[in-house]
Length: 435
Image (tube, rainbow, N blue to C red; front, side, top):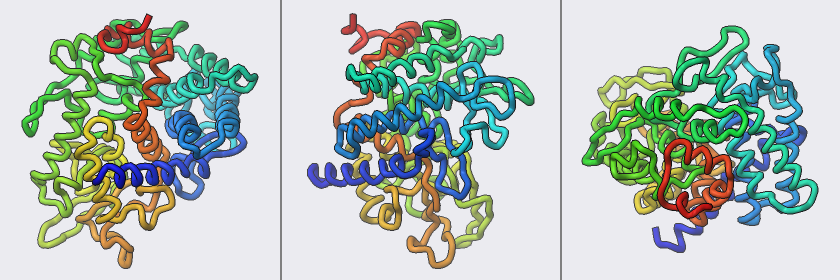
């Protein structure tokens, strides 16, 4: 891509993608639709991403500041006033919230879990909105006050359930889930927010317990902290600028988490060039394997090879699972780490794969050039029929971080994030420049 051309295309992609957060949000409570399917609920993670996207929309002229503040305030007021308790149809408990909420009522959907990670994404969105809407008028002051109250209400210590690391969640029917946040993943943000709490903080020992489960890997000539799905190297970076700051683990390795994500992005491209499973389409400009929807479950014989396809699964490299499904949003979300290879892949997705041509909100969630898709589909291969809020948000936000670092700057000004980073043992870079 030439510089001017790439800038114009990113601007158009950011605008098209943000339209999801204009149109797929309840005006009554501010909840954001998880997925554009009939009668689908809201996702609290998508709602948190929406809260983070509204400041970007103001900066880029996609919303008026007053309208964005109103939308933000509607959302935060809902979460502050919604039922918290052990009843099975509550909205949340102990300051955490259920993963999926009914778009109309705001109550728990599908008997889902009270999700620690999705609550963290919601809170990160609230805190970034509070940092942005800092004017002295009453409405913007209320945004700050409610975001602060929501964050202070969370009982992070309860979420340990007496263990060293944080649990994935809880249900009123069965109690805590058996899984804990271990191994490097998107929980980096969760631990930092939990450590920064002024009311019920995680102990510092929980962070070292988490990092003790890390796995260092060497792959395609890159040494890096391993996590297979690409999104795990991105979500925490949507809000926190890890350039030049290190915890004890990264000090020992001589890099930071930003550099680690750059290497993970390069591994994705190297894997696509190698293409060990010989899927159609994979090459230097066509990659992006992450947790995503897919064309399965199905087994098809294609070109003499029996192929097994999955539905939603945590796809990853280099060890799989991999069924030929790629997620263009995960490519864009790596833009700050490796723009030289991401821009090439975006150009391919727009002009050769034409993944924006038939879509309302920019890229669809996933595509698979190996799977033929439904007969007569306009692509000639499988493309997801849906958009997901969890995919749309990182596109808007990481394009903006690449351009201006807006979200990174907002969260640098958040004392809870700064406290959490310091309690986790981070120092160096911009952290050492703060008072």
